[in-house]
Length: 200
Ligand SMILES: [Zn+2]
Ligand SMILES: [Zn+2]
Image 1 (cartoon, rainbow, N blue to C red):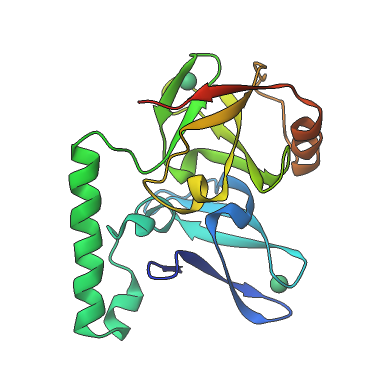
Image 2 (cartoon, rainbow, N blue to C red):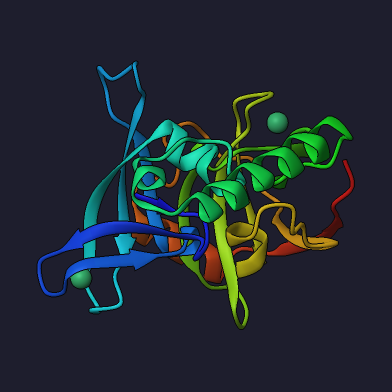
């Protein structure tokens, strides 16, 4: 599902058979109702074949596998050496989080502050706003409100890579806002952004 060495998620593609994409190629994430052990997320992703496909990702794969903290099935297929790299990744991640360094963060507009976050809090993603930027709609784990940030691809795809400053849409979104990826894309190109420094 998640390949920690390539930092990509593997999905099936009707054209290519199997395909792999980074987190920033996800377009929509929603919790699949009725799932709990594990919680499963239904996602839509932009495939290298040019189409958008649906996929399913377990919570562990989404939030923990990029940190090397999940024991994926691929471990059984790999050599002992790769297993060692994997557990080393996990140790480093655990130590960094313990020291207050967060793998992902965003700026919560209603709270006017940076917040630590996990990918499962991402709702919509799309390229836009400016060159090579990724727009991310995040459901704040702290206050539950929706914020839209414009970040680099690395900010999304590389754990512990946090942009020093990001652009924030200066708008409080209602609960029924941004239901579709089209609404979200429109927002990314019409909204006014404010640069904020990310510091937790
Ligand atoms: Zn495809
Ligand atoms: Zn918040």
